Image (tube, rainbow, N blue to C red; front, side):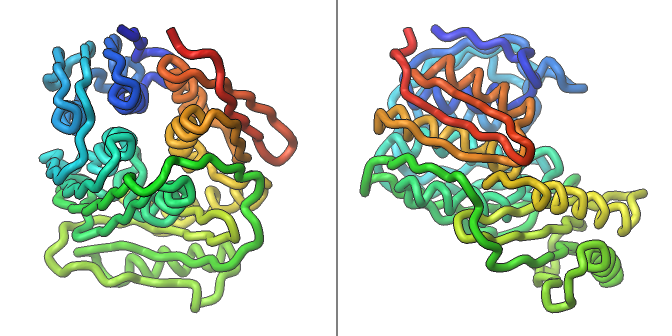
Length: 349
């Protein structure tokens, strides 16, 4: 049984999710202690518990410690099975993190799966739906994973109520790792403001402030239509489309935070990425680690990418991945980006 220290590194929920995903993919049982030890409210919260229970369902696993507030978990996976699944966080907790947990297992399971996920779709501490759909899913398709995502309803904190549909087809081909050394030329850039149930002046102010700071013309500003009965929420997004990758950056509005502050937070993210030469932004680099590692091990060949920043979150994720997979990471920092190479290693014992 693999033993994982949930307090190591950044000490958050990613350690749990990566451990569950790779436990199923490798068929190796895992014990996790100190779950989310470095968070203000340690232990399993509702969204993390949904991740655990989703992992149990898709792999017929045996589990101990699956209760709210639990700081220890023993997970013994069975065989992952493709199929049709529905999971509901039951709060504004992120349903995209549930997808992150079980997606690798359903890919390895070989077949077609359809997921219905309910909960938060746009949360500050989780990958928003549009990031997954525009940035992450296209890279998976380049690996050979058939994945399509559809947003049926937005879900913001504190009401939640969002719904995402995911279709996964991994039966066609093996995963094929590839290098991603550069983002390529800029094709398109635009901003959107999601503001269901809020006055129309809110998106106008945020988009105007963003456009002024970045020097963007009005034709790059959009206010997507949302369902009239959706609960209130606010997400300001910038999408940058390059030849080889698309990046989505998001800033969230909340009570007591001005439109200018929301816009400035997003401007800072965009400018930091522009100033670097890395292909991937910090969050996309983190998300990309696990699927690329599985592809590298499966194909027994190296792959690499560059990123604007290698965060503590990513470094912790790399440590967990190496507990399960025979893989080596070589990270090198230059003036304007990080380079990360993954290579097969001797099997993990």
